[in-house]
Length: 457
Ligand code: U2F
Image 1 (cartoon, rainbow, N blue to C red):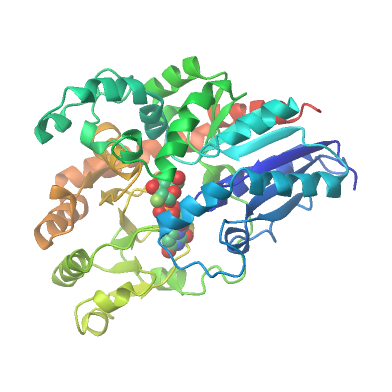
Image 2 (image 1 turned 180 degrees about the vertical axis):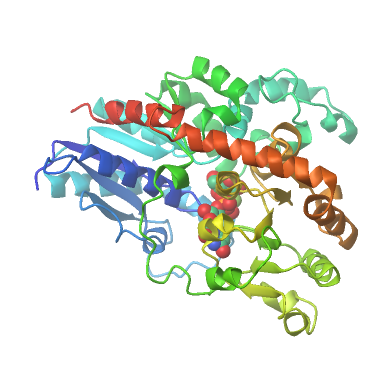
């Protein structure tokens, strides 16, 4: 098949960054190739490990994956931490991407006509500029954290005068839409001098480049944060919320093994609607042994049915005999088909670390949240959940203790406040659903994005 456009896509292969980017590309690839017509070819550049963890089998034939070097010296086996891996990868960039782009251009017999990248990968701006093509960064988190990073300079200026820890509990009244967020909720990468990690430096570089982007794209919807949306629209050339992607592409057929851990069939055996506590902390975080114990003890005491996605070796930290004693009402799995789980009528609450994909999936399914944030954007997301959107609660004191977990669960599952929270999340879900309808804001933004990427080189 001959294509008339060649779009390069640069992924950040950590956390849940590459998967939502691929989901966006799959939507674009489908939309850009109407039946019988040659559309755009998408070359997806990502590390080998991350590429192999995602399903390209559902993809249209116009998406081709390329492995880029992850920075591990040849012949060595990587044995470091998550942040070491990020550091190595960033050190190898952008040369690793440039090499793969050259290969893809040769394969396709066609130069790249547009670069879509994870927003973290700010150097894609320079690569695009050199080629004279549009740069379209994709911010994989929420607009609240993007806005916080965008206002880094103002935040640092205000922060300079802070002497006491208590002052960090002041709110960001000077940032549109973030007036209820505390300084202490901010992603630590904003304070790059105190935290000069490769990721913090990268994000800070990104802030300066974003206004040059042809459009900044998000997996979110405008109506969740109208004030932030209005503000960022005035700051960027274009600011396009095109999600939630799980509502925008609901027809993706599930893979045959999507319920291999039996979560959905287990949920079918739960007779009471909105009774199950679903627990997951995403793909990077494992809470401490102490917190896992507190959470487990609470579940056992309350005897609430629960479904717990608990990966790695964390199961070994659970109280002795816990799995056997709770087997009548609880299920622990290493991985759950989360989008399907949250869509199930038996699920009543989601205990989460507040990674953006998890928050948005919960909103899209109308499930209230109990938040225990850990790093990056998770604290600011949790503050918005509790105080702005009012669709969940944060555990008191910021960590799972038996008392804080009990209180949060009781509040959502049995209290009057829980009913209000449930109604709020139902309303927000309705807005998300409307956004992806034919004339909804996200659908219109998606059309605009399609136009942007459809200009030949
Ligand atoms: C980083 O995200 P994480 O991977 O830690 O967390 P999420 O953004 O919540 O994404 C987790 C995804 O993994 C899926 C789930 C989400 O799409 O549906 N999943 C699943 O299907 N089954 C499971 O058992 C467990 C998870 C980072 F840590 C966050 O702070 C950022 O907000 C995020 C996006 O930038 O990236």
